[in-house]
Image 1 (cartoon, helix red, strand yellow):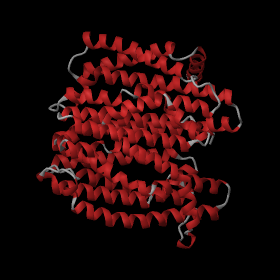
Image 2 (cartoon, one colour):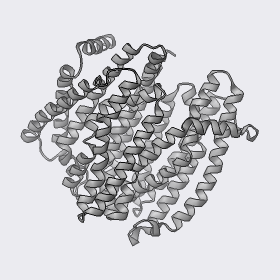
Image 3 (cartoon, rainbow, N blue to C red):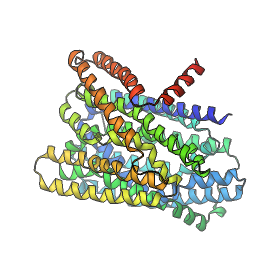
Image 4 (cartoon, rainbow, N blue to C red):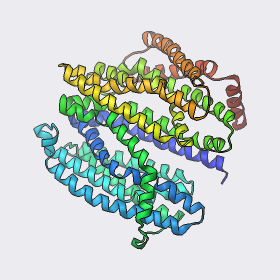
Length: 508
C-alpha cells in the first residue's frame, strides 16, 4: 500500500478512536460522579496515577523495545529480533511477579498510606487491586503490541480500541444502572478491556509477524542491558513527568481532602484530552523531519518546523478559546451539583501554559532527531524538582483548601510556560544551528489569534448564549467558524492557504 495513503489511514483511524474515547468520557464522567460522588471518583485518578508509578521500573526496558525489534525484522535479522522479543517478555514477567508481591502488601495497608473515607475503604482497595492486575496483564502482553507497528498497520489498533472502549462503556452503564454503585466497577471494566487488547495483540503478532516467537533459550542479558541503556533517558523524562504532575492528586489527598482530590481529578479530564490529541498530531511530523535532518536539508526542515507551529496553532487556538470563554457554562451543564465556578477557574489555572505550549508541541521531536534527548530530559527533571519544591512550600504556607488547590493546579503550568518560552524554542533552534529567535514570531501570532477569537466569542456569549446544551453547541460552532476564518488569514501564510486549497480541490 502507498505509504502516504497508509499514513492517512492510520491518522484518521487513530483520530476516530480518540474521538470515540472522548465522547465516552464526556458522557460517562458526569454519570459516574453522580453515582459515586466527587471524592470516590477522585480515587480512580489517584489509583491510575499510583499504579503508573510502577512503570518507572519498566520504562527504560520497554520504551525502546519496539524500535529494536522493528529494525531487526526489517534488516531480516530474525534471530536478533526474537532475542529482543523473548528478552523483553521474560523480563516483564519477572518484574510483574515482583510488583504483584510488593503492591499486594501496600494495598492491604492502603488506608494507612492515604486518606480514605471509612465507607470507601474496601471499595478503594478493590479498585486498586483490579487496576494492579490490569497493569500486570498489560505489562506481560506489552511486547505483542509491536507487530502492528512493524507492518505499519496501526489502524488495526484503532479499530480494536474503538470496539474495546464501546464495550467498556456499555459494561459500566449496565453495572451502574442495575447494581449498587461501586468505584471498583471501573477496575473491572479496565481489566476486561486490557485482556481484550492483549488477546488481539497476540493474534496480530501471529498473523502479521509469524516469525516472532517466544523462547526462554533466547533470553539474553546483554540484549536487556542494551535496551535499558537506550531507554534510560526516557526513564528520566517519565520520572520528571510524575514529579511535575503525577503527584498532584496524591498531594491533594494527603494535604487537603479526598473531596478536593476528586475536584482536581475532574478538572484534569479536559486538559488530558487536549494534550493527548496534540501528542498524536505532533507525532505525525517526526518521520519527514528525521529524513530531512538525515539528508542535511536544514533550510527545508526549518520551513517545516515553522509550518508545524502554524498548523498546531490553528488546532490549539479554537479549543482553548472555547474552554476559556464557555468553560463555566460547560461545567454547569456537564456536572450539575458540583461547584462549577471552582472547576472552571481551576481548569484555566492548569491550562494557561497551553497557549504557548501546544503550538510548539511538535518541536520536542527536535531533540530525538538530533540525538539531544539527554539535555531535554535533564531540563525537564530540573523543572519538575522546582515544581515540587514550590508546591510543598505553597501548601505549607497557606491555610485555605481552595488556595492549596490553586497552587497544585497552577504551579506546573506556570513553570511549564517558562520552559516552553525559553528552553524549547531557544535550545531547539540551537540543536539545528538556527537563529535562537526563529520560532517566536508564530508563537506571538498564535497568542494574538486567541485574544482576537476570545473577544468575539465573549460577544457571542453575552448576546446569544443561554444555559442549555443547544445554545452552548451553537455558540461553539460559531466560535469554531470564526476561528477558522481568523486563523486562515492571521496564522497561515499565503503558501499555506494555497497548499490547503489545492488539497481540498484535488479531493473534491
